[in-house]
Image (tube, rainbow, N blue to C red):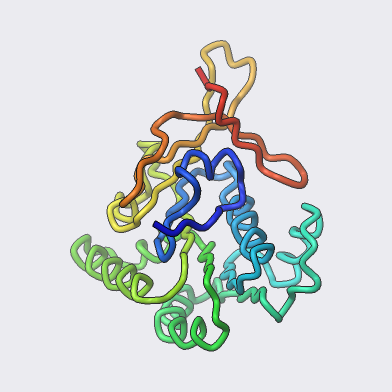
Length: 231
């Protein structure tokens, strides 16, 4: 089974060598857990591997994304608009932005030849467009099936539920994705120090670590401490 490296050593080890090629990975976490940082690391690894990548952003402008990557010492200038394409979505009309992705993404991936795609506006924003649960499930299923037919690996970010730090906001994306990674805070009872933990809760067609591991976000990399324990 062909693997692609995520680009974070300890996490790739938890995956059993990397993500399965042509799979959909969801990264679920609350604010401040580093979802965008993980996504940028995934993008940069693709560039280092000679791949073409697309990054959809809702919160940050294109130039800001490049600045963030430069701050993290990712040397991306030579890839800009050659193999790295950052697309800023319109936050004032997210419905229109999502419809544009659904309409244009197949042709965009084919034209660019992209093999890694990050959709960083939390997918929970897309889910929240539908008040009716059955309509939400149907639209999410159609969207994921659209991605599944494309020749690329996808990384989607999602907010966590307000009542369950292991679940996405609407509890759908983890059932539809091939791989699910959960980022969360661990707060000890004495409140001396807050730790961040990572868990691979699901990975189709592959064995994977089921342990909860600590991680740390440094200026130029993310460290997942695969040999350590948060407890």
